[in-house]
Structures are given as C-alpha cells and as structure tokens.
Amino acid sequence: MSFEALVSRKDDAGTISSTVETLEDLALPDRQVLVGVEWAGFNYKDALCLTGRGKLVRNFPHVAGIDFAGQVIESADERYQPGQAVVLTGWRVGEMHWGGFSQRARVDPDWLVPVPKGLSPRTAMMIGTAGLAAMLSVNRLQAEGIRPGDGEVLVTGAGGGVGTLAVMLLSRLGYEVAAVSGRSEMVAPLEKLGASRVLGRDALNDSGKVLDKEQWSSAIDTVGGAMLGELLKQIRYGGVVAAVGNAGGVEFAGNVIPFLLRGVSLCGIDTVMQPFAERQSAWGRLTELFREADYESFISEAGLADLPELAEKILAGQVAGRVIVNPRAT
Image (cartoon, rainbow, N blue to C red):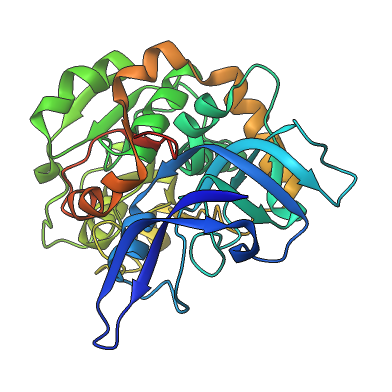
C-alpha cells in the first residue's frame, strides 16, 4: 500500500533536505508491528534531526519523528492487535530508526505502550515525549522527597513543551511553581496553567559567585547550559534539580560548593531508554493529571510539509507550547 512520509535525504555535499514523498509499504523497516500514524509530535530533537544539527541521524534516506500515536494495522506480536491504539516515544526512533513523520510506521513491539483508556491518539500526542519527560521529572522530585509546601519549584524554559507541561503537572499536584521564560507573551498563559509567578531569564544570569541566596526547594531544568550552572547556586539545602533538556547548550560552568555545603542533588532524566513498566506508570499518572481543555491553547497543528520550516523556528526559540503533526493534513 502507498502512503506519504516526510523523507530526509543527504546529497553528496552533505546538505540535508526533507520533502513529502509517496512510498510503498516495502520501503518500511522489517519489524513486527505496522501502525497507522494518526498524530506525531514535533520536538526540539526532531528539529535537530531534520536540520542535521547534532548529527543524530547517521543513515539516509530517513524518516524523522521521535514520537507518534495511532492504531495497529498489522501485528506479529500477541501483545498488540489490529485496531488497538498505541503510543511510541523514545528508543531512538526518529534518529536511528524510521519514525513518525509518516502515515504508516513499522516498529518493534517493545517500543510501544498501549494508549491508556481515556486518551485519544491526538491527546496522547498533546502530551507526547514532552509530557513524559515532565512526568518523569516530577516523579524524580517526589522520589527524592520534595513535597508540596517545601517551597517554590522552579521550571526553566517554561514556554516550551516540557516546561509548560511541567508547570501544569506540578500545579495539579499542589506545588507552588515559579516559571522562567524569555517570552513576555507567555506570562499570562503560564499563570493560567498554575505558575504563581513568571520570571525573565535574567533571574538566572551568572552572579560570579560560588553560591547565591537560597530560593528554590527544587527545579525542573529544560534548558541546560549556563542557566543550569546558575540555578544550582540558588537551590535550598537538600534540594533537587531534575535536568531534562539542553536547549541552552550541553555544557555548563559550575562548582562543587552547592553539593558540598547544601547537599543539592542533580538528577538526569532520560525518556529514551525507560523500561516499559516506568513508561506505563508515567502514562497512567499523565492520564489522571493532564487537562486537555487547559492545554489546548498551547497546541498548534502542522502537516508534514510544514516541518522543515518549523524546524528552524523551534531551534531559534520561536515556538511556544507543543506542535502536533497530522500526517494526513493537506
């Protein structure tokens, strides 16, 4: 059967270009489950894949798209049946393996999670990898003993997908949330999601000190880079920082004093290789906490042909909230 996909190709000069092409099922990888993709997400990592920055994609031609949801068409694995709604995030799909910027995808059954009851494939992609990352971050803070009432939890990069969803989840759980965003137009929307206050990026400018005034009980950092180094100096005694993004860079300048004098913990959050049980548990919590009506204003929709241009915008920090992709949009 023929279908459309956004196919990335690399020419002899090393230039990567992506266009919508018509393919046949035989072009898909030889894996056990064929999924009809109804919605995909568009993430920072997808933009890196489409532009070639970060060198995440090594083999071409390639179909990007690190997360998607849809219905099973065919399955050689007894865990999944035709017509069943499934969601896929991680496992380097969209990087090493063909992903969700396509109307059909053939994948390993171990990569899938059944869409929880109460969620549609579209809602699952409103949440997507960003929501999973936010939920795993919140879970880690709670596992480290951070509770509502301990003080403000800071969310950096709060205007993006992970940031907006982290603000929503923390607020729903009763935490007092402070948000950092460089976009003045995001102040009112973030407050509506549950942020008690919204700060500009200058709140985390480098002070030049090894320690700053204790301000935050904990933080979810979606930015990385220099901002993370300054953030660690402001965490209260025994606090925790969940590091879940690198939009601001992969390197940060820091020192050991926050760890030695305040017992601060820095925890990495991985969404790619999480075991099935952890994914299923996180999706269960997301089903309970996510409010579609409250988040709809943060969603924009795109078609496959829109994504190359959107990739440049998201890398430039010009896309707020979460973009979901309808592979059948004209």
